[in-house]
Image (tube, rainbow, N blue to C red):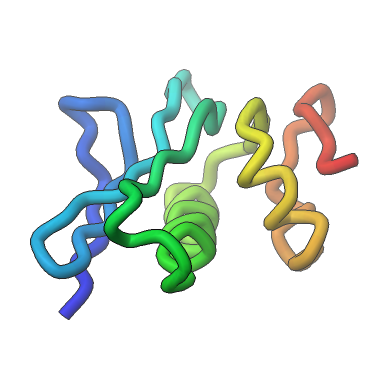
Length: 97
């Protein structure tokens, strides 16, 4: 079973699949978060892990009530495909262009 968590000590959202961890690094500030980089290990490639992780991270941002800035190209691409998350963007956040 896949396990998603917010690993605040490491400043990243993590998704563990088959004992291997994919992650999205972030920077948090009061009421806001910047998603910086997504990394999916090669052994998890081609299984949709990145998309599942990205959606879980964006759902976590929503649950935390934070405004979002996106620096990560992968998350930006996911938000282009799933515009339901665009309401999370901070007014000065990087838009998914």
